[in-house]
Image 1: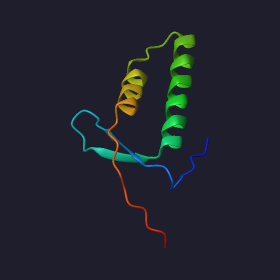
Image 2 (image 1 turned 90 degrees about the horizontal axis):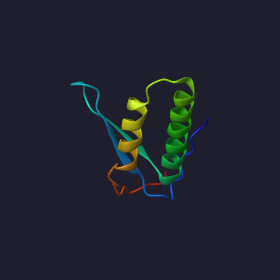
Image 3 (image 1 turned 90 degrees about the vertical axis):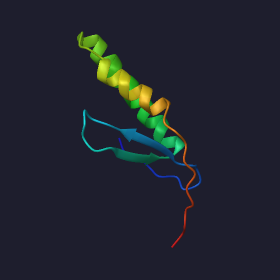
Image 4 (image 1 turned 45 degrees about the vertical axis):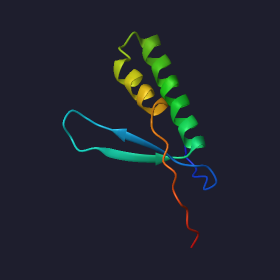
Amino acid sequence: MELFYNCLMPPKKLTVVFMGEKKNHLYVDSQERSILLHSLVELKNQLIQQGRYTDCVDELIFKVVNAPVKRMKIEYV
């Protein structure tokens, strides 16, 4: 699935931390955020059907939903 960047939407900031590793920031607009959430929910449903644990996917969904909003100025070149 491809992600498209829409310059008209305000981007969201998502911080991902893996047990003591450095933090990575992911900036996505509202459309990309929606696609990301739908993909994570689909993955969770697949894991449930397979009888596997969904803890890590639940954590990612929680982080995406609660990610702070950061306004960014977009310059056209």
